[in-house]
Image (cartoon, rainbow, N blue to C red; front, side, top):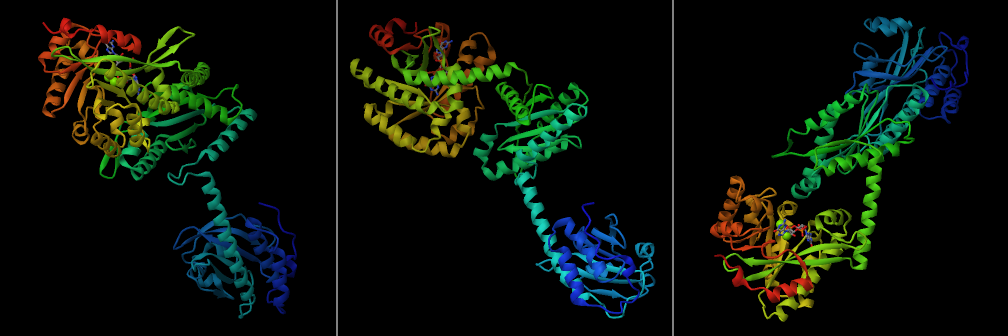
Length: 623
Ligand code: C2E
Ligand code: MG
Ligand code: MG
């Protein structure tokens, strides 16, 4: 219990019947005793000074535990010569019941006989009782203020006005405390899910780290969790559905944990878990597996059921880690590695991960520099007719010439990095500009105005607001005609915001630009997407073409894709043709276009120009 107020009176002064009562003096005593205190001290001072000022043995103040209230708990209880322990009780069959119903209740004598079931009255040997309700500014009863005496009191309720004044003051204090508690709660909790927030988590982790220094408790572990594909769900189903999913995820996470574990929402779709008092490495991994297993059941979002996975990074307590942020950072690094496995995985932090993170930062810096110093180049691969081997156009493919390694770094190695860092945006514009310019140059030089150029574009590029104006600006400045430009998009990128993408595609298509669906068969192959989006051709992924002559399933997929393209009345282009046999098969399946090493690999522009000059389709026509 906090510091007790100075005792202004002793109980010898309490009298049976107060012969003389000076209201003003009593009021002054309570006012002075309670003026400089707040919170718990205020309630203690109040009951203490009230009992003294009114010359009674007991005084207490309570707060309702439920609304409408039957149970209350004491906030302070003066029991004649000291503070009693706070306790809670039911007000049924007690004089307090009427008070909580909003009445002032005064029983100057024989209160025990009136309420024979009230064991507290009997235990205190109370004879007289006066209670007033503590009412909030909005008019609801928050609790009550009571004085009791072990002797009869005067029939006039002496001190009632003082009690009423201080009940108002007590109500203000309770409301102030409630606001403070709410503010404190809000500052430590996430408003959407109600889970603890980052501040709370760091605070708890700090406590746990300190406890570990002073006493040898069982070790703890920190988990960093990130939802897989959350952005896609949020973007495609909308923020309300995204929020609902986060709420459901937090409930599911909480349900997998033991009492005493802490789960917090750090931001967006990132969560952290503190597992305290862990028994073993195996136990932590079992909890992690349980968490991931719980995500195998779909989340029901009103009419839809949605599957989402979670990637988890784990850090075990270690003497080398000093503060909570070290734990979170390392768990985050481990989570990043788990995510790179494609989602739904977990990884335990190890020191190598630091080196990998530094390596990634270095790579990012090198890519920025490569863009600035012109180490990135476009190579071009011919796309040709499978009927007569005539050159139809090219696909522009990025290459990074690394002078140190003296080799071309393939796009699969640096495009994901460019996408993660946002560098793909300036890079993408450079690709479009360069490819359009190159097309125009070759069309003029070789007198083939119908040559086409296929350009790969990434998600992020397509999300830019001014995309249409910028594309048209480039076409205009380079002189490339929209009808000769084909943007290659992948299915996954179309799953995100399909409505927004459809609008952009339709506008560009009105200008004549075409769209090819790249790597078809690798993604979701959503048929509804093919209907909703203006797609002009399907590009059959290399993996199916390369296996189609030996593998029945691959052949069936190629065949089905052709039939699909045919029924949608769109073109099909086979990627990665390496043998005449593949050409023959594809030709028989009525595939119209292809590209692959058989005719030519991707080449820098000068080499490609020489190739075009010497290319003779007749030599390569099907037999
Ligand atoms: P993609 O668009 O599917 O490109 C086709 C890939 O197949 C190219 O790989 C090409 O070199 C390769 N290829 C073509 N014919 C053959 C063949 O006969 N045999 C074999 N083994 N491979 C063949 P590359 O150039 O490594 O590009 C990989 C991916 O990088 C591309 O796949 C594309 O998704 C992406 N990419 C390339 N350039 C860009 C770009 O400018 N922007 C964006 N966003 N992505 C690009
Ligand atoms: Mg492509
Ligand atoms: Mg492809």
